Image 1 (tube, one colour):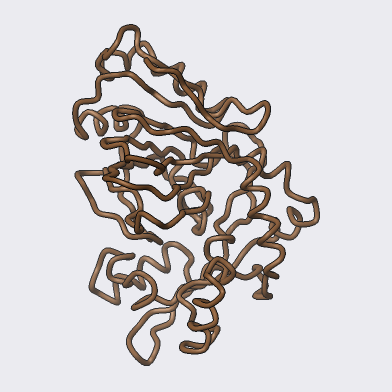
Image 2 (spheres, rainbow, N blue to C red):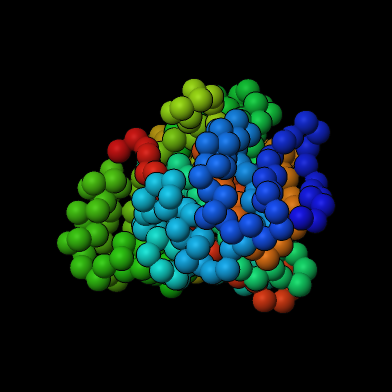
Length: 317
């Protein structure tokens, strides 16, 4: 196993590196002796990186992930993905030059996966890391006033269509009646606009208490959904074209009041300060507690294939 090199804040142990008993030990052969240690380290630190094992196929990765819990479908998604096999999806299919900020998967909803796995099938020529960060450390580092304001909750608004994902893809159906059923189940307010497109809004958590450790974590995607995440010229153009109320996505405080751009800048600065970066190697498997650890993606060159699995739905429905 090659040396593990990373960039991390002082004192961070994330992720814990776990290696094979011998070079290329098949991952599933090692699973029985490693399972409890993996779970313990994921709960303690937030994530583990399994490196140097034999992972010859996506099927083996699927088998490994499903051995912890039944894998779940990617529902009410906010980014484009492609199903690879049952419970296995491509990582977010954004252009290679685009940076994806730190986030906890589906923290913009009231139901999310507690566990998430990543498998590097093909490591890129350069870049393409999956930076991670401790959500507990992010919470502690946030200014107290900001934590208190976010603890009152957030309101996420989405306008589906040409500038966001089609609602058919997000809800996995072409039937508006089925969309309405799903919205009612998830506590999502919906509105069919005159052009037949859909607008939804949902009040969700800004911070959350971990159900097992009892620790408070920073758990939202306000900095991704907020209009300030757009390039200034893109934001201005969309607001001129669509009107502020019809931006593809935006987020407000739970009472509907706007979140100042500067407040989101503070959030982004804290996220940057807690970021841990390590390069992918082919065959790597990263397992995270989705509430304890956020993840991101850096721009890259060359082919990159990272697949994802999620499990253990949990939330406030």
